[in-house]
Image (cartoon, rainbow, N blue to C red; front, side, top):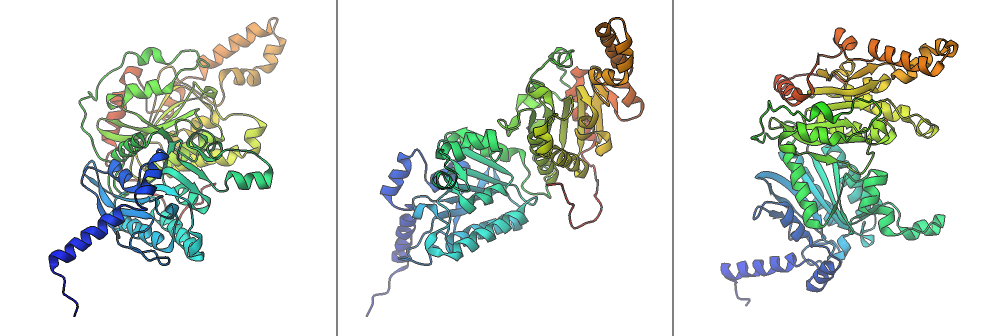
Length: 514
């Protein structure tokens, strides 16, 4: 007769079992993971969440085949970041290479569903070899259902992906469906087909890092929003970003009281933007002087550098900044800048984050490459995003704003709420140089000194047409302001608009020009 175990003995068995599961693939594989400069799934979760706040779910789920031992290649659960709930799943590379099986997919889907139904962000930590071959079509089904859940969660809860190892093949599409992608330099890799396949098909020689490393995706493809050195620094930035975001689309972003005076004036703003319309400067220096305590978190810093987007706080309120960057391509709008800004605008609108737009652009970038690449379609994305957005929208024209670029950068005509201009602003159908060559072409050609006459008519055009007072006279600009008072003007406008209630026409969804 089998002896009945006591409650204490059963509890000891449970503790032993959980300790074994927590070891993942075992000491040797953990040692190998550390030798690659990578942490384990649970170590990464500990970096992300507040100490002691993690509650693991489905720890004892078993793989469907093999030895059926408890534990699978993903760790799931929930915890807190700065006291607010966050759901998390982290692939465990020490177990079957972090591959996605039927059971792994079910664990991920369960925690994603909890994220949506309870209204809290979800963070996926990716370090996976992809679909588990032994599971056949069940692993493919798992990826498909995860993609569908990513899509349903889009705009409901913030979704963040952290790439700390391989994310290859079909598995790369789940991060691509999320709101922000962080990649750890040196270890994070994303690609659909690896170097061996590319070599076999095209003959091209490329390394894993050149093909799908953090810097490649942050600077060239734009797939990654952040490329960060080191896993601890990566997780610190994930925590920082979450602090700007609401938990879900029904909440407002979290306020963070600051000792930075809302009415603080900044004398440097008088001289920071050069009077010469073609002289470059760094728009980030302007943003740093506007936000609370100079705390600005730039998104997509290395991609489409002629546009700057990111998060800051104004009077304690999180806001999303969209700004032309005159230090790159004179701040002109091109395909990638339009893509970058439109996606950011739509994210902010989905999660009730007000938009502050700083304008200094000569227009859309000309050229065959831009036209053949679809600048019309990509530029229309930004028009669509601003027009559709119902959050408070405040724009400040600092220097130049010409033609279609004036319209696309949160103009009053795209339902902008408050539109300001500095006295230095030039707002016109075309820049003075281009306009003079069209409007005064014959007069310049007939002049005794064409170059001198061209300079004269350019200045005449600038004084007569390219200034903020004509659009202000039509109500297109709400006020021409002292640059030193820009911070207080924006904060006061945010306070005035905090109860803004705008609605779009009833429809299933729009058809954004993708």
